[in-house]
Amino acid sequence: MKKEIIDVPGISKHLKKEGIPLSAVVRAGGFVFVSGQPPVERRTGKIPLVSITKQTRMVLDNIKICLEAAGSSLDKAVKCTVYITNAAYFDEVNDVYRKYFRRNPPARVFCNVGSWPKKFDVEIDCIAIA
Amino acid sequence: MTAGYGWPQSTAVRAGDYLFVSGVVAIDPGSGERMNGTVTSEAHRVFQNLKLVLESAGSSLERVVQVRAMIYDRIEYDALNRVYQQYVPDGPPARTVWSAQIIDAFKVQLDAIAIA
Amino acid sequence: MPLAREIITPKNEMLNVSRNLKLPHSPGIRAGDLIFLSGMVSVDAATGERSLGTVAHETRQILSNMAHMLESAGSSLERVVKINVLLYDMLEFENMNAVYRQFFPKDPPARTTCGVQLSSGLKVEIECIALAG
Image (cartoon, rainbow over all chains, first blue to last red; front, side):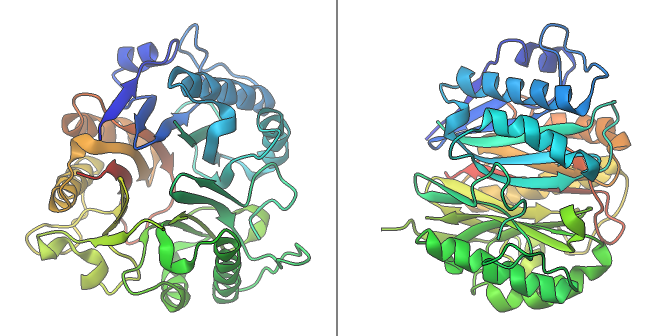
């Protein structure tokens, strides 16, 4: 039983360049584990200052790409944890989130956390079936 | 029974040999009404809801392998534990606890992974 | 037939915080191909006492102990697939990373790091899911 590190186009290279010691996606034991994805622009590796709605869209687009790079998909997601800096954002995050998980959405936990040292407000991680 | 009644999330998802459970908070499982209270009263409600979710999916509290517990203030750690140990089996699941603000002013939230 | 569920305990009993502090959790559980560890804080491996310090110190202590915990179960740090790092203050992210990198120099696991309140003045807590041996 091995673990496989999956290279994700537009995401893994930025992690490597910044020396961030994590793999965006790991596949093992029949599951895919996606690291917490902040709203990073895949083209530049930067986090733009945008609305919570746009941030959530960027995060979920990144998760989609991570899952697909591992041969999985959003509809195989089983559990997501949503980390946000301000509970006032729940509704806006939900409005975007429900567009990505229309049927049989994964289990989910919402977690209100302290700010990150960069200017963004939402991060999501995910476990999916491989 | 899980947070966000009517939200885009499944209460629990079965995948292979495991069951992944969404965050559970103290709501009435019939009406969805919030049952905010003390850490003690909420923790009892949370465990009863968790038990309902697990058993509906053919699993049980005995099969839980990992729990993440959030409390609104770390001062309530002992209060959480006093209730928690009444519900977990001998050989309790792995656990991580931390404090953070929880939705809807709840004082406790749990999520879990169990054997299906 | 549901998977068997097995409790994991560390060979070094000083690291069995669950038992030593009479807490309602197990150090870890194995179920099928996966191992789930309870969140670990910085504990002195010789005395079993909490070992508070800088983020760097606590991270190093936790990951050394985690290696021992996984090895006691026939697994290893290399087989970790997902880590959650809880930091008392996300401004210390780089201080944690500098040590973390040393423990996962190649093919690191998936990870999420967030800022939350921990107990007892501790600065770091880490939990993980790993492949069984």
